[in-house]
Figure 1 (cartoon, one colour):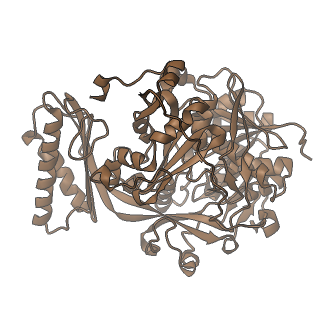
Figure 2 (cartoon, one colour):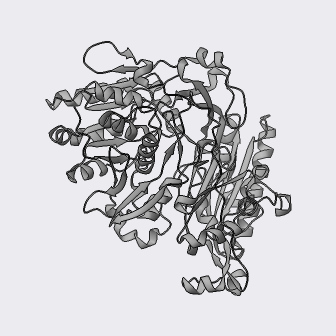
Figure 3 (cartoon, helix red, strand yellow):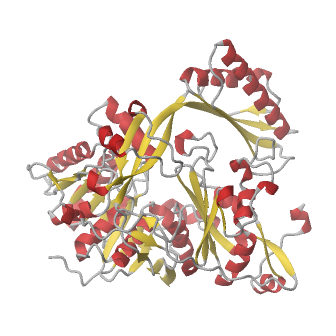
Length: 632
């Protein structure tokens, strides 16, 4: 029987496949961890794992989990009685468990490894085709089965709780939502009912905060330069969760980085869409009224997450092949570097297009040129026409690898006919790589068979509806009343200040969409930020990604401007705004030709925007107005 009178402490030990190996020993050494949770799976990771399993049936999982996270630390995990939950199983969780059980046997330890499966739909195409799903964002039809690399449903926390209840010390899953590894521990430990939606939302919020590892502790933080000397020994996050849903975020003792209202708020807004309808398999979360408070050094309390039922469907993500891509990055320095970059890019693409015709190959599906460090006709990220050094990225997509090979040959072959100052730091000529696109759809929960293997020699068994906890459902389109943004009083003298003086920002991706979360440094700044950052203004700032010719094409609507691809949401609890930019990443992931295909730096672009504030407010808070020279 679990002791529910004390909170449990859950350490977030991995944020992606490739995360640093220091997290596990660091969190174990802190001496007070009940659970270690690991998140390894991004959408594109699934396609990489699918190719690995195709080449070797014993692969298809995050091997780092076994070799780097578990192998050196198994004895300590066993001695301390720490439970481990991980989605490292990828598309081959049984192979992951087999490798781990072998290590446990060699170390003569007594640890039970359970496996949750049933999410992998790649071999159940008939099931998907019967449902005739369409892409949930674009309405596109299901790709042909022969082009699909992976297909996985996002499972929830209930199977994890069932595995722990069955006596598992280590739980390996395939695809599940990132926060489910945390919620699963809470469901098991506290015995929460599946219709206690506010509790489920609070634990899911905690899981969302720690699922990206050190990002909650100063990684990817707006004020990174203030922490840079501490980041070599950055701490990994710990969520302390109580039976009544109270959540406190901290980090490993004697570690670097920072846990503050700002770092945690940035992570809360990371990679979300509508904060009042954050869909998870177990609960529809409303984070809009979450309040963050600094309890002590490196301790932040979270309250106010709400749950509004649970969806009746699982989200399914497919990855599928759609041609090839390739490209290269050059450096050009000296006089007129930007102009030379433009001319060279035009010449390379013209030559490559001519060569495609000679080889009787179709034209490029898409081309992309980005001149980083200068304003150019191709749409640059940092306007500076007089830059004496720029990076030039030229890339393209084509139906065949041969077509991309033509581009790569000309990229290198034209170097001697390029401009002076053309250089680079690279090895061999780059090679074509397959384009993998994402297709997201919904599948009724009743259509999926989720299995649990407790590793005790018995056959895996189907989890029942009761074990999966099928609670009362609501439609996935559930909405609650919108919050009204306070009106800014801009009467009297005003000045412009950069947004970064007023706010922190964090951005991320979901497929081809990007979000930019903006959190006011002071609550009274929020109305001024909102007055200057309408949907139309944000779309104008990112028009080189949307492809708009001019600001006049944009809607003047200041609340929602779906026709511009931008939505704006208000979170009064954290004094923040979340902007959702639709279809702005050029396909996203490895389908994109962009320098930043996941939009991780989009907040940095927006933080340079001028915000109008009363002169008295600027003076009171020591804000530095933008000068005429800076405007010029």
